[in-house]
Image (cartoon, rainbow, N blue to C red; front, side):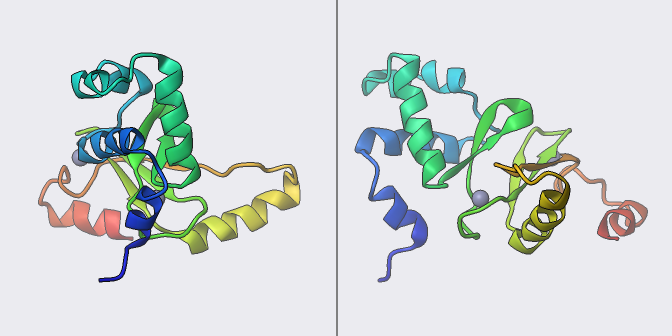
Length: 148
Ligand SMILES: [Zn+2]
Ligand SMILES: [Zn+2]
């Protein structure tokens, strides 16, 4: 069976860092560094200092296994449906879940426009606020409004 991109990325990290990823991936809502630091399971395997957590997060970010949600100062697992590069993070006001929406074309387009006026662009983060599908009431009006 061929390895998925996620599996081959995970093969590069230590078993301990993998536990950090597993915890972020299994969480329903984005996790901050302190949520990780206070987790009993991670403490039990030796994560005690913030620097250890930050090192693990840095590696996971570099491999793009996770994304930083800048506005929440928290982390979510990548959906792994897109290559390296910016993605669009949609934050639900109602349940707090963050969806990773792979939309490289849009991100590339935005980058192209932005660098005309702001050539020093280093990082592009697109974060959207709203209400996710699960939290959207089953009303046809809302459905059409959000679809357009
Ligand atoms: Zn992603
Ligand atoms: Zn929601």
